[in-house]
Structures are given as structure tokens and as C-alpha cells.
Amino acid sequence: MKPAWWKESVVYQVYWRSFCDTNGDGIGDLQGMIAKLDYIQSLGVTMVWINPFNESPDKDNGYDVSDYYAVMPKAGTMEDFERLVVETHARGMKLMMDVVVNHTSDRHPWFIESRSSYDNPKRDWYIWRDGTERESGEIGTDKEPPTNWRSYFNPSCWELDEATGQYYMHSFATEQPDLNWANPELRMEIYAMLRFWLDKGVDGLRLDALALLAKPETFTDVDDPREIKYLTHNAGLHDYLQEMNREVFRHYDMMTVGEIAFATPETGPLFVDEERAELNTLFHFEVADEMPEWDMQRFKKIQREWAEALAGRGFGSQFLNNHDHTRQVSRYGNDQEFRVESAKLLATMIHTLPGIPYIYQGEEIGMTGVRYETIGDYNDIAMLNKYVEEVGKGKDPAAVFRALQPLSRDNSRTPMQWDTTLHAGFSDAKPWIKVNPNYVEINVEQAEKDSHSVLAFYRELIGLRKSNPVMVYGDFTDISGDDPYLYGYAREHDGTEWIVLLNHSEEARTFALSNHCLGSDTLQLALVLGNYAETDPEWEMEERSIALRPYEARIYEVLS
Image 1 (spheres, one colour):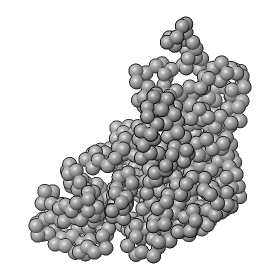
Image 2 (cartoon, helix red, strand yellow):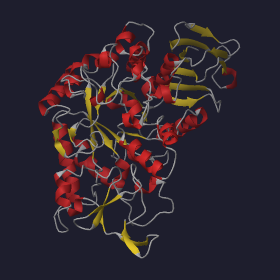
Image 3 (cartoon, helix red, strand yellow):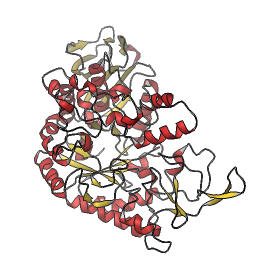
Image 4 (cartoon, helix red, strand yellow):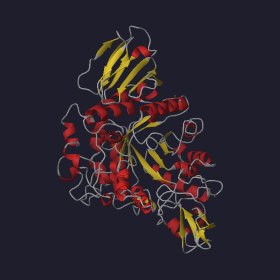
């Protein structure tokens, strides 16, 4: 692979409304980000990704934009953002902006015009369709939604506009109408908006919900509307992305990452193949969306298939949590007796597998998911809508609540835990969402005092990546087969070979290197990094096996 600065990135995601509040309204803000830039820089990361801060009614935490060219007052001002760019750059880091181009808010001026009349010039900027005649189950027939498609957040992706008598499409909340990317005038307006922010100094774009831009060629019912894949990867999608690249990306020294739902090793490379000129890299969700709990064998298979598919073609991304997915140590580790060890193990894995590693705020101190007591404590619109839908079917409310808690997006949206003061040092006021009660034990202040903390380990890992190209460009070989607990793989680049060994279990286990082709019987390994405080720094092959403690992770360099 050709070297590039963005391939060597380590990205830190800031969900600003839960990061640091400086004006006492209980909501994080851009000034809070600026105040914590020194901390972010201390991690060694190279790029900071900030979630949407554009003007918004905030029905979906900023992913419902009502003005692409303005900053929402909750976040701050345009002057605050411009200072954030300057201060980020002054610390040798780059800034990635999250942009929403599949849909807007229903309060966006474009949509207000679009719904005003059939013949408004912006009517075609959104997806409008007549209702259809279906048997309603009652006497006669009624006008019903154009298709039986559902949205991510609702039983239907159609909402009737009483004034014009037509339905508009929304792949997410009813307040988030989908844009019509088939309209060239709309596309040019989006490209102009992207250039506006890039001209302000933004270095990267995280492009939300890109797989949904192109709509199905025909609007007809599907056999199983619950399988929402029909909303994604439709004809014309790659044409739009290649046009976006020609109109915008190629003119800037920047990084792009696309959120590509339902991307597979077969379809994913089309987005990032360096010969196709679309995106630099992508997020796929075969783990975060489709693996609800840890499954080592499934995870290995996903990693092998993606590594093979992208080899020599393009770059992927590595993450296990973000603002939409619950804390990785709670979901995929052990957040009780092995919280520190499993947090470090997951970090080792994400930073040594092929692709760009993403760190979600608080992950670096081992923050955990939360269990609020009532549904009223939650803000996650997807969870709340699903709760209403399932209870409406007659299901037990308590059972529905318990089932939705583990994967609620609010698990990752609790305020950043800075110290042991009231509200975890996040704010002087009552936060917009409750703080996780374990902030007294888990916080940055405590972690800074402990040389063996999760935080200290993240700094070591990131430092290794910045000084060892094998972690970025190395070939990948799985050497552990289908073992359900042990994961081992080799990374090799320019004469350097590293071996990563992981025991993802609560019991001690032995990794038998004799089962794998790792060279001579006198193979000698030197420890690069381990997640336990005491580990033999050098080890010479005798019985060709290594004993690993619960959730132990080791990185070795092959010496001979």
C-alpha cells in the first residue's frame, strides 16, 4: 500500500455534548473541547472527530440538521468552531467533522419549501410519493403509505403530509426527511456546503449514512420489511460518491470515512479501492451492529475476510464502540472483575489489527455502560421508539425495558468522567443525561495517578503505532484458527514481524505456537507490550507455547 498520512492516523471521537460543559447549562460545548485539547493531545492521537454541531432541533442529537452553515447555540458559535480548528492544529492534530448528507431536519428551510406545494422548485429535493390503496383490514380501503418499508427508528419510513396529501420518506426519525440525491441541483448544494467547511480548515469528513443515498429503483413492497437492507446499496450510489470525490475531495489534502451500513467484504472494497476515487476508508458494521455479544470465532472470520478483501486495494477502520454503540468493555469485555485487563485487551486488538483505530471518548479510561432505573431516564430516540412499538404489541413493559437496556445508545452517551467531583467534573449544573454512578472509581484524575491504568496503556499503544510502521502497513496473518478464546495473529512489514496473542476469557489458557507455522524451532520473541504489569520481557522457544492469564494481551517482536 502506498504510504499516506491519513493511513497512519489514530482518531479520537468527541461526542461534544457529553464531553465538557463550560457555560453551566448541563450540555457539553465547543469551548469544552478546546479546554480539553491538551488532554486529547497527551494521548498521542493525530485526529479528533467531532459529532454534528450544526444548527438543529436536536431530535436525534444533532443528526437532524436545520442549517448546514450555522452552529447550534448549545454547542457555541462559529467563532468557537474557528478557534477549535486553530487550537487543534496548534497542537499538531487534525480535525474531522461529522456531516449528515442523507437527510435534514424537517425544519430545514429546504424541506419547509419542499412541503409547501407540489410545484415548489424544492419539492424534488426530497422523496415524495402518493399513498397506495391497500386492504386496511376494516370496511373499504384507505390510502396507506407507498410501501411497507420501515425506518431505522419507526415501523414505517413514510409520513403523511396532510397539507399536500403525499407521503415523504424518512429512513430515520419522522423529523428527518431523506434528501433526493437523484436531483443534481441538490447534490451541487451539498458539495458547496462541504467545501465551505473544508475551506475553514477541516481536515477530514465522517460522512453519515452514506449507504442510503441512492434509493431503490422501484418503490414496491418487500417480503420482510424488518430486513432493512433494501434501503441501502442501491444503483447510483457509487456514481454519487465518485462525483463527490471529483467535486470536493480531490481538491483538498483530507481524509474521508464513510458510514456504510451492510457493507461486506464483497461490497466494501468498492468504496475504498484507491483506483476508484471514492472514499479513503469506511466503517462497516459486521461487528458493532451484527454481533450483539462477543463471539471470537465470528470476529476472527470477519477480520480475515476483510483483511483479504482490502489487501492491496484500500484501508479499513477498527472500532468496537462509538456514540451509537454501547461501551466496548461492557459489551465485549468484562466490566466487573476484569475491567482493566479486558479494556486493555480490546485496545490492543483494535490498535494492532489492520485499519485505522478509532477511540471513543472515555474508552481510554475504561468507561462502562450504564443501567438507568426507568425508561424515563433515557434520551435515545431509537430506544424510546422501539419501547413504544414493542409495548404497543402487548409485550410486558418491564421485559421490553430490560431487553433494550444493554444496546441502548445512551450507554455510550453518559458524560465524560473527569474526576470525583459532582457530575464527574463534566459540568457544574445537572447534566442533560445522567452521569454513570461509577465515576467515583473510574475517571481521568484517578487514571493519571496510576502508571498501570487503562489510560497509561492507551498512550503506550498509540506511541507504538506512531513509531512502528508494521502496525499500520503490515501484512496480516491469523495464526489461531477457530479457537473460541485465543486470538493470535502476525503483522509483517519491511523485515519486521510482530505477533499479537490475546486470551479473551476469564480463565488462564495456553497458546500453543507449535500448532502454527512460525519458523524454526529456535524462534525467539521479545515482548513489545503486555497488559499485565509483570511479564517476561524476553522468551525463547522451547515447548513452543505461551501461558496467558485471563484477558491477557501480549505483543511480541520476532527476533529470529
